[in-house]
Image 1 (cartoon, helix red, strand yellow):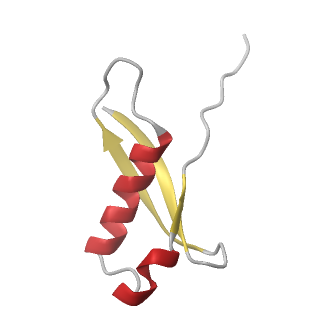
Image 2 (image 1 turned 90 degrees about the horizontal axis):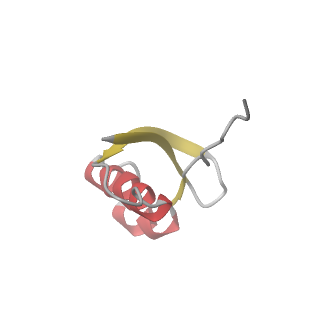
Length: 69
């Protein structure tokens, strides 16, 4: 499993909640879009905002950083 913390934000960019999202590893690895989709699904299930506001939410997936050694 590959896990990343994904922030769900409102239409003004304010962070509402951060979800730890785990997706099974596979060749090529999961995409940022898959992590974002899963975080938004969890936000909907948690009823983070009223349903009529849901389409204004965004997900911010942190970028992987490689350290040079």
